Image 1 (cartoon, rainbow, N blue to C red):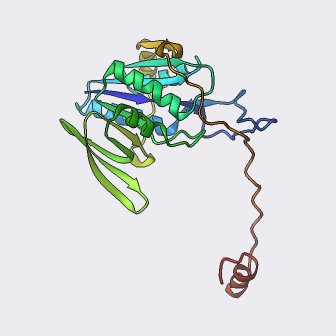
Image 2: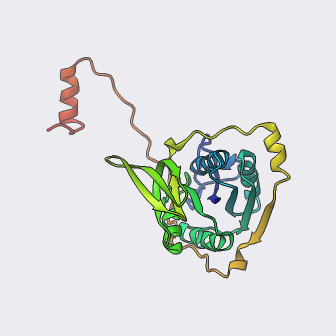
Length: 250
């Protein structure tokens, strides 16, 4: 079984995002970038499936500037076999990313596509759903457990009311959630081996797609500053303030 995993280069989750002066977006100059945490979980799950003998090849794909090669090398160090970078220097939205991934899937013909449920920069949570729709494949989102069989996959997914278990026929698209696994730290030999693994670079123009974003960011602003909390000396005072000031008790 071949598994295709999509990964995205994003602002490292330990970094504080800074809004540009013109409020057009996030300032990414001189900041640490890394693999989207949800995508890292998807790579880890693919590697575990291969280690369990349920997969034979893992292909990782990323879309973006040349700097995304670093993210792909990180995925190769985790255990992926080869990588594909679709170079595209202009902004992309989930719709355009999914259209490109559709072309990659049609070329690679994987049995399973794994994606993070969302990217931590835009929190769109749309790419996996778009991709499944374009391919007309079954999909399972927010996966917290994956059990791959010979012709199908059983997925436990997180929903508002708890957990839901569904079965999808292969090939299918799965988006993964945080509780699926804990990604490993790559060892030095794996990092060195990753430098020798195949990484193909393909220009986005070669797919003949219109990748103009269908959404426009109007403005990005800092969240409002939270007011400082206060200490109360009794339960009666707390109830009084919740009733008369916060108005959360009637």
